[in-house]
Image 1 (cartoon, rainbow, N blue to C red):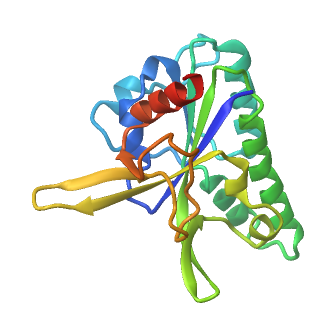
Image 2 (image 1 turned 180 degrees about the vertical axis):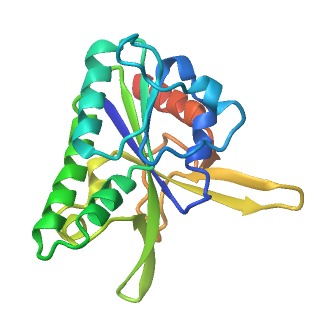
Length: 225
């Protein structure tokens, strides 16, 4: 069974930035909205996948069913790939919602919830040496007088029927702070109750560098020690 990790955060918080450290020769990127990645040289590292030549390591699609097919195909046919990144995963829901914006009734919310859930489900059932990292925007919700940061969704079905973070053992929150000389990016690994981020006890300190490769190394070390 593959490892799946959720990373949430505000726009500009450093989610896409964290891809910079991954080994592009063993990474496959599903770029949901086709945006440029915010680090130098990304276009030379992530080339469009060509079905005819079987070359390249990135595709652009927001179609949930097609994303599931790519996840399965990478698992079955690309043994050199060890990490799959889905960036920005939340737009899978957003694009479907906008395509059905004029439709009335509850069915469209059922459809987008089901499709997004199935992407997560598929990501957890791949070969053992694969890790799927899902990058999504966060949102603040108010409940019982307190504010809590969680994965951003559309409609109430996913929030009321399924706690999406409950499908992941590791949920990180990308954040940043301004110092005197620069902006520091980092991941929050556990929550004080103000967010849904979490990780196994002792796997990480409360904050770690915004570095997916280093994070994956620590996960591997933790589970194999």
